[in-house]
Image 1 (cartoon, one colour):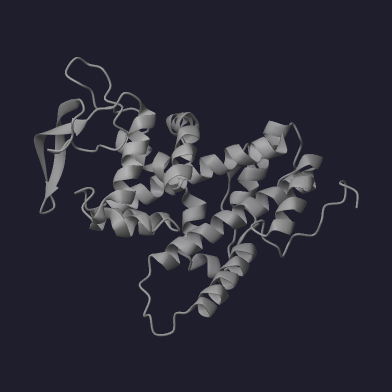
Image 2 (tube, rainbow, N blue to C red; image 1 turned 60 degrees about the horizontal axis):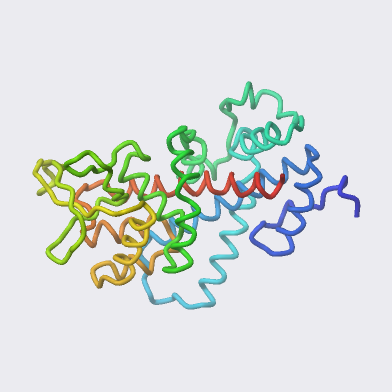
Length: 307
């Protein structure tokens, strides 16, 4: 089949190996049709992860749960993701526009939907109106330059740590970004040098390395209070990434969180329940930071594959 005639992947999901291979071939063609289909597939993958995160955050009864029902649910979620993707004025239009600009290909947007790279409101189905996934997709903020630069700077090191510990690179970078304000707030030692502490890990009695003492905000019974705390200091940010991953995977306190790597929200919620942070909104803030990181990493990967 000619690359100029895109394969029909309208009912497939790029998570499938055959569909992904076909999608890569189409993307290399750099035709407007291939770019639009690539964008729709990326959106469907993103939607699938959001649905999965919502299911993970919902308590199961345990009465009817079994491998068979889990497989059926996963297949159903895949179909939902495919059907909900590619809607006029949705995320796929933005992705297609971005890919087209980077590849130097002209993609004609649906009339009335895209204007100078901005989305206009479009009619949506009853299913979308009732879905928080659709609301998130339509209102997800555009990543800032500081977020983009932070993710690009730390992703390679985080991938190495993921291979060693199993904690997803997007979770590591997302949490580091949240804790440091995407690199804007670095805990410093008394002489002004950076501590390279990306996760705000405190220095307990067993810590034998350097220490940075700073004033921090803690929540006690929901009330913000300031006090001086001692934090660990590292020779590099790579060392900080490894120390955090080691803490999460080896400490009994975070044993449950280390098993929740299939869902950003479940992982963040488990950390909050384990007392990692005292902010009552920590789980929501952290899961948003992780999802932002995942979008940026996915965009970088797709651009690299289509180059």
